[in-house]
Length: 420
Image (cartoon, rainbow, N blue to C red):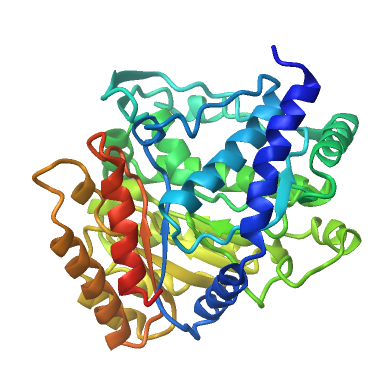
């Protein structure tokens, strides 16, 4: 293992490069553009690229990690990812001169263990297929779901923060992080225990059983959030919400607050975004989606400052139920929506968070730059037709066919479409 001093030298070299990029005028300009978009007063459409097949992108070893210590390795990955993105992509991700240090948080979980069959996909993509085996068959099984115990090892948190300050002090601003308490995808959890088909069939055949599961799980999610607030573990000022820019004047964390002010803000979820989704509900009616998801999310969203809703499920015909969520600001428009229907229903009241189809990058036959440009232009144009701020979020990129230049060209097209 390289010595601590050697690892420190590696990190400082990377940090100095990031620091130089962070003070370029484009960073403040992009920061303000995100705030405008998130306040429904956009300067232009914004775009972001995330969830990438790094094994295919690391052509020249730019992402090879040299540190061995787990914490330093995490810092190194974050720095190398920032530099890779800047060198090759330059989407609307703001490069800041800040390093966020994790806290030593322990969560015992719900006491349930996933049983699944897995089929791995191509090497380098990190993608695999899963079939979940039902372990939540009866009401007795519901009782097996445990209340999580949450705690912080304050001594370890302090040590990690001091280590970061020793390495990055004078180069980057070092700030403590916290827990990403915004995650409200209850169905993503339940479906791994009960199975996708079983969930859908039981909504029809055993609705009371499903409601008992939802009552318990949303109650436990609320309890977890109570504990994060009580312990002051909320991560205020997170730059992203579900792969999109989170910068806003409507919640704190982006107004130059002091460390002392930020510490006080960690005790309330009202100071951050939340996000929710029910991806397995792609095939259910708005009425079912409302009863088994939105009605539960109402209390959850009310606890947060702003909210994002949706992921891969098509939501263009469900805006009328999503708009009932308190504080919701962004709604996902996946590759499978009718954009015109969704944009018209939003009517300028939400950010039109368009998810372009990542399949465009998957193969030689799929990669047609003119088609990519048309897809992005159509999204921006249709969103704007009805007064909706628009963001273009390329995510879930399983493969680029081992040709990272496709991703770089996609980013260049997006820059042009978005007026960069």
